[in-house]
Structures are given as structure tokens and as C-alpha cells.
Image (cartoon, rainbow, N blue to C red; front, side, top):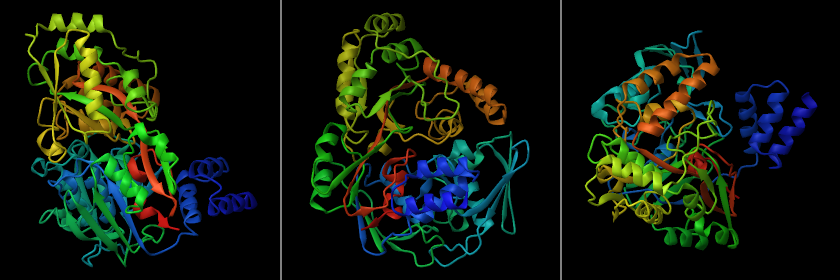
Length: 527
């Protein structure tokens, strides 16, 4: 076994084996997934070069962005926070929990009490040592509705938090076998004193310190000398440039002004593959492009109207024309086969103009224009997707009117504010987290304003259910409720499509999110 493991490690060092293959083969030999993943990381980064400046060109940034992790609602704030911040744990590319500020995680048999042992010697950028008290204070801040945290729905299930020595203990209102995955939520960056005094200070325990913060323009970072993990943070500096225009972002990559970019427009992905010095990277995951209706506001408080709109969209056409085939069709609930316990027997909703027209007539709508707001930055091809939707809705006699909004301010002025708009979600590692973040009645990011007591009851029951067959059945029932009663129109799940220059080393496919789940610039190096 030792000889075979040595060969696998050597192959990883030379870049001849992916993480997925390495983890698959070594776990078959008896290694735990966590240990296998850690071995791969160490081996793959053994040849990493240090130094230099890695520059990233990104869509998804606005002048209204904040360094407060609780408020991160679009891609640039997410990646910025993943640069200077650390969570207790994170989810690895093969779906395993990886230890970060916590070095051990355990629970009781009922999964109602969880313990996180805090790694010793981890420093914040201000020189203070990370303590269990900082962790508890951070989690408590996110339970405060005034914090407007995107993690509110996640932390509300914690009934008691305590710190003793290097141990954090969390007691839950009901058992939850997925709690470590919830603690990997990118809003839960551990901050000194929980960030209560100054949540937007940008002081964390991550690999880089904030030196420039110009929201909507540029974010600059320098290596934190006392960072605890030498397998991350290879460059001396890194910069993130907000370039929302697709053409300008591609031009910056091709000219070498940036080393990597997110959100390659699928329409040019094939063309960009042939550009000298550039590589297009794409991976299927849990991300989805959507149109969301507020079910508590007219005319979307009428389920017949909501159903008419759901039936009036051609999902396959959008996958073909908007994603260029780099994705799959959705079914009006936010879960696909990338999730554990996905129910693939739920009937696929199809475009049906006649049925849409019948539901529209039944709704009694007065025939006035139904305004759908969108912007180029809502998701790649969002304006074109809305126009396709308008055409197929018109065939059903539904008067859809498209209002194009500016990118700047979209995520603060339109999303979660206006009753019908385009949006996207990057997905979450487990179903409980996705549903808790966006569909639980009390979640701050419940962007369809969906409040259903039965759904909430099922969500809590699924958390506490340790029988996987019963849990799958509960999740299936929840999916039916969202699909048939909710305000979500989900036409497509998108691949994450990024691009990097040839001089970037260490890139790895990660289905958890764009740009290696927001860590591409801190995990890669310049060859």
C-alpha cells in the first residue's frame, strides 16, 4: 500500500493526477477523504512558485459593495472576502469538509451538539490571536437580524453557543448532520470580536491583508506574513479589478492585464479556447440562473399567474442559446444531481404555451404589462434570456415587458427589492444550506418572499433525520412545494466558466463556485 501511495503522490506532484482521481484511489485504499485531500494539496503544491502579483478581472462588483461579510451578495464581494477571510471550515472540490480555523469537528450521536476545536496560533491581521470567543461572537452577530446577514437562515437553528478554552460548542434546536457544511458559508468569516464594532474593517485571518478597497473599481492585497497555511497564498500580492463589461474583461485577459477572469460568456467560450496564451476552464456544479417573483406582491401573489410564467419559458432553448450547452435545464427548484439525495423522479416541467395561456386566463390578470427587470451583470446572457422569455410568453398571450437596469447598484436596488427580476445563485454544498439560505420563511435572503409553514416544518424535520432514505423523501416533498407553489422560475443550471493565462499554475476544477470557489488567486501561482 505504501509503494502505491507513494506513486500516487508522485503523480500528483507532477500534475498527472487530478484531485478527484487521487482522492478516489486513495480512499479506496482506506484513507479518509479529509486525509486524502490534504495529501493531494501538499503534493500538488510542492512545486508551487512563490512571489509576484496575480491580477484577476471580475464581473459582479458594484460601487455599493462592502467589506462586511454579512452583506456579500454578488461575486466580487464573495471573492474579496475569501482573500482576507477564513471560515471555521470549507468544502473541498470533491465535497469533503476541509479544516481551516477549526482543526477538529465532532458531534454527539443525535447531531444536536457540535464541537469545533480552534487551531492554535492563528493570527488576525491586527496581530491578535484568533480565539474561540471570536468565533462565538462572529456567529452571534449573524443571528442578529439587524446585521442583514445572508447566513441568517443558517445560524437561526443554533440555540446555544459557548466558548471554553480552544473549544466552541454549538447546541441546535434539532439535530443536523450537515452543520459543518453550513459553517463553510462564505458569510461566516471569523472576525476579531465577531466584527461587532466594525464589520467592514476587512481584518481577518486569511492569506492576504487588504491594502486597497475601491468598491466597483479595484481591490488590492498583500501577503500576510503570519498566515498559518503555507500551501495557500503563493503570490506576494494580488489585485481584483472590477470589469463588468464582458468584452473589456476578455480583452484584459488576452492582453495580459489580468491573469484570470470569471464569467466567460458561453457564446465566446469556444472562440476564446483558440486564443494564444489563454485556457478556458469550466466545471458543472450547483449554480443556477433564475427569474424570481415576490409571492407577497401583486400580481405574483396569484399562484395561477406564477404557474403561467413557469410554463411560458423554454428551458432547453435557454440552455442551448444562452449557455451554449454549458449547463443543464432546471425544474423550478434549486437542486440538481450535483446534490446528495437529489430526487431524479420529479417530472421535468416543459414549455407549454397552451397550458400557460390557460393558467394565465385562470389567474384573472388584467392584461397590463408584467415588468421583468434585468441587467447584463445579473448573469451572463441575462438580457438575452429575458428577451427569449418575453417571446415565448407572448406566444401564450402573456404581456411580459423587459426593463433593463444598470449593473451598478443592481444587487442593492433591484435584487431582493423589486418583485420580478433576473438573478443567479452559486448553489450550496448541501440541500439544507440552499433551502435555509433562500427559502426558509425567516431567511434574510428569501428573495422570493416565500413563506410556507409546511415547508419550514419539513426543512427542520430533514435536518434531524439521520435515515437517508427518509431524508431524501422529505427533500423531495420540499422540492415539489417550491416547484409548484413558490416564486422561483429556474430555467437552467450553469457551468462555472472561467479563463486563465498559460502562466497560471495550480488551477483545479472546483464545482463549488467560480474561480475555484473564490480561491483561484490565492491557491494558484505564476509559473
